[in-house]
Length: 93
Image (cartoon, rainbow, N blue to C red; front, side, top):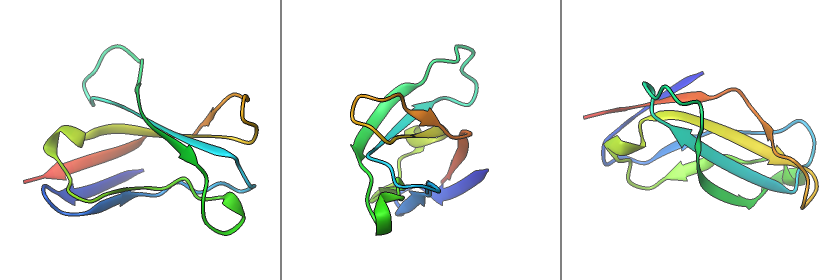
């Protein structure tokens, strides 16, 4: 999946789960990064009806936020995060 936003605009990357989850995690890396390791950016409790929403919002999109964003979710506090397929987030001037 891919999403696009303008620099300075607000944007959102959707991530919803089929079953209720406890925690959400977002990680990021550059498009052309050869190393597969992601940088953890944000971790927060799931929200929305039945705790199935892990979407993130950007109030003011920056060009540096362009890249591959990966959503993870876990159903137990000390469980392992299950990662979704990375989302390509494009930022245009």
